[in-house]
Length: 77
Image (spheres, rainbow, N blue to C red):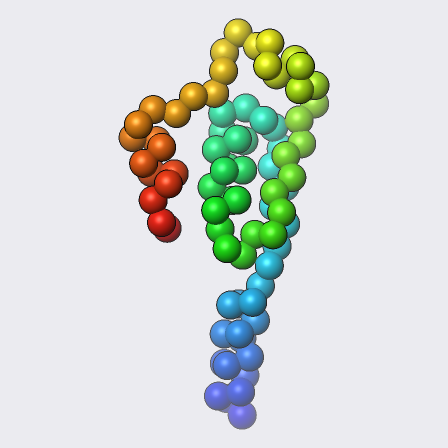
């Protein structure tokens, strides 16, 4: 009986899927969305932002990643 329970829990964790909600499309929010999208257990990533897409594009600062950040984000977990 113990084997069945632990096998069931193992399979349940292995097959688990979830949707990730990110609040804010700033640098931290976009990084969180990118990292979450690379997780095999995440089926959808939804980003909530109060500003319109046009307002985000016209900001004085933009999101950019340097080489070290890109390497970290592209490396397998």
